[in-house]
Length: 114
Image (cartoon, rainbow, N blue to C red; front, side, top):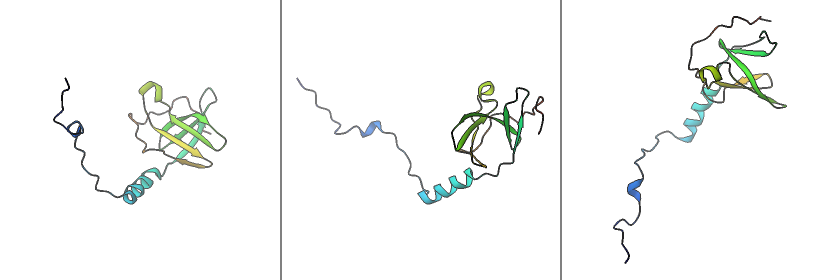
């Protein structure tokens, strides 16, 4: 005995999603403006002689490096689960996503500025 479904398709399972009103060109321009944030960048060393990048007052440590790029994440990535990241390409420092720290600026006590 076969049971016949009264639904021809399962559209009732798909939630309603409103259409996005921006065009791709507007979205791309907005993203470009966000990623071209002006970052005031300084470099220093901590007491273990590791290089620390200070961008807009927040400290970043180098996590990974290739020949051209280096990837930096917030110094409080593990301690406070901060997801802020920046990428250094040559002399330029860019943000792959908008930089949003989940904490205030925490001053460095053990850094000697060079």
